[in-house]
Image 1 (spheres, rainbow, N blue to C red):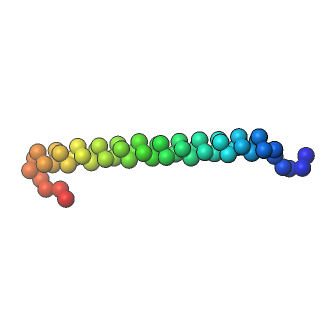
Image 2: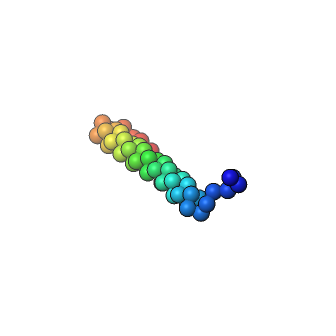
Image 3: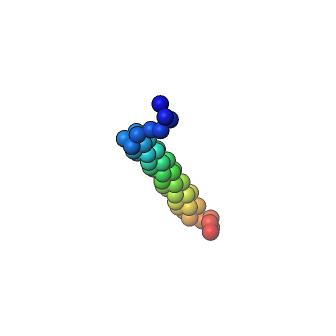
Length: 54
């Protein structure tokens, strides 16, 4: 063993890393959407009750 991995193993490791990174971005986007929806609901409730939110 020379400690060097082959091209196939290297490509597979890169693909797995790319999938993990993509998964993190998907989770972040879902979380951001949830925060935006929650913020919109709070803003709408405040407008209905006559409060001013900037």
